[in-house]
Length: 579
Image (cartoon, rainbow, N blue to C red; front, side, top):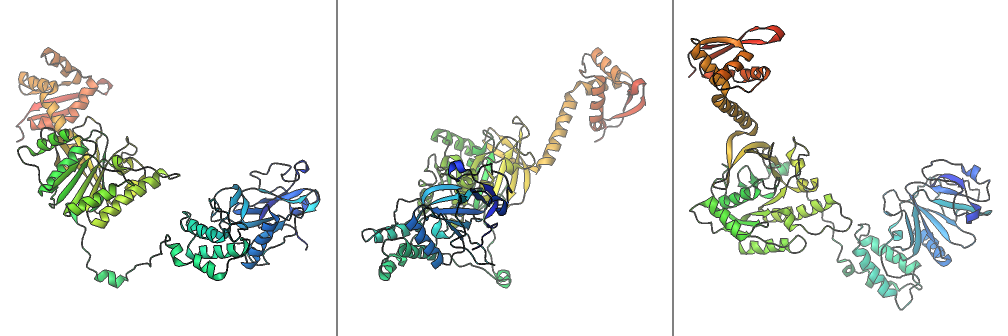
């Protein structure tokens, strides 16, 4: 056969190093797409090909295993390239691996699902094609023109197992096949379904065992009971557009109208912002059926898991909120629980059998019920998995679960949700989020940001009543409230400030009319014993800010001229006070 290389499998060719039995290239190949053509490289006594990305080499270092593999490839009509070492009769097979079924670039002496033992190499691997003048080509097995190479079959996927199937005889065939079937059933890769496992083990029986089992024995091993661990794929449930339009779908049920619907809710803020007070007041309000933050509640049983608290402090806070009222009997509290994966959901399930009218569960805080991260699990996957478990519980029971957590420091001031601690895995699973934030920790006003699938996005202003341990919702939006608060701050400073006192005194001393520069106003304030401690420039800015307040006081303020250096002369005149 006249063979001139294989540019589908090999991206380039390179001379081999004769000092290393031709098993390595004579020059560096990493990162290089082209070194030589097949015709250029084959002029050497030692040369080889460089494997393309997306292809793997599965080789067998046993002559009998090589023969059996080749027989299996032909029997299954696999579309691959197979080259043989004429010195040892060992074979190398080449497959596509574009789907990443084999996720390691190099594995030595690994067990394959079918029972063979092989070396597996991917990436820019050097493949010897001629060693000391001895060719390892043409192929002993290849596709025909017009065909494409296939992805590596499931039979040849590496599995981590101690099960030994190669040349098993009568003493271990049944046990080995049964154990491998169960091993593949529980493999987490997702590549082995029921029909695939049956096909793999039939190949094992025919080509790997020392003597194949009789068909009836093999059927007994591959009976349905063996595959109990594989979930059946459910049929897709769907509705036509007409059916959907005619369906009577119950609207979202709210525990706190407009704020807390059934499903998974996130409540987040920086530490020591009053989240626990928020949750406790909500618990008591819902259990009593009274408004919370001005939002109507639907009375129901409540479970409040205050997992960072002590009973004495919890009781003291409840009494502070309620005053002389008694705690509602349908509010249950706890300061401890199991963690996810270690009984938390089971505890909640058990609680609901005792208190079936429970519609609100508050978990303060989420970190206290989190389980252990699984091996090789990303933070996003862990967040999504654990929040997903709690959301499924909430959805299954049609209840609201509020997960309390923290926020990180100001990652995005325009997107409160982005500041919730952890990854977007938590936020992505949650139905709705409530984030408490302030421009400065010392601020008296807190912004409550609402976002989610079932609530209207909004930003509301809250203030905290320390005496009664309760949050108070302000009537206006957060932005409007903050504007009004700033105006009131300036008005208060105006009324008690020395600038107003000085202007009033100037008008009293000058028959209700006075004009002059800022420098003169400052000098007069010192004469009056009510000194203005501003520069002329800053006083000018203040006069512009308080112009409206002067009008309210019955004082007209105008700028009548500009002096040298663009200084401004101000005129004040007593007029009828605006009522």
